[in-house]
Image (cartoon, rainbow, N blue to C red):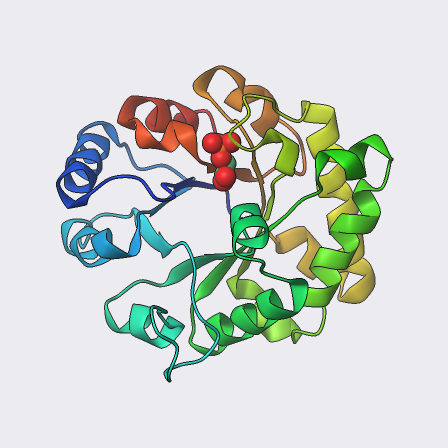
Length: 249
Ligand code: PGA
């Protein structure tokens, strides 16, 4: 049985005090369930998040890594460093990294490999731009992103991979993919995984949806057969909204 997951991507928001307050606010109203909760604060707040959530079932993710373990890469943080402070999940391939920091499928593939080799779980983001969708090319784009970054990875590593379909046109825009659009891509991706690996692997991979999920649309999206939760941006910055979304999963 695949896991349901609701993850909050805080992006470049919340200084250390606001971050601590948000975690404490979440904890006040969080009730453990079968669904796993993950939060991804900025790097500067990760150590503190690990400390506060030590005895909680809420997991913590970083938003990025460098692909090397160490070296002359000014300003970068490695998977090994994150592991050493107790962070065991990382978001890789987010469209904002692809767009604003020129991350290519090749670079993203290296990051995924490094994370997995350092025993981190990867939340791998993929998704098409509006032009791809209007020209009907969404499946081609998604297939390339996933093939380039993930399909040379051995099956044994896949227990540490979570996928997140994030149509770029729905991120931070207030537009959401319709439940049917989300379901179509999720089912397509499951098919690709089955072709490249096996049916059982494909059935066991969690595929999250991300892109303007709010408390009022979460239930509809999550009710799709192949949608196993969400990666939430804006609405994860408010404890009540985030918990409402979590509880809808
Ligand atoms: P959003 O962001 O929920 O603000 O659209 C989603 C994401 O970027 O993960």
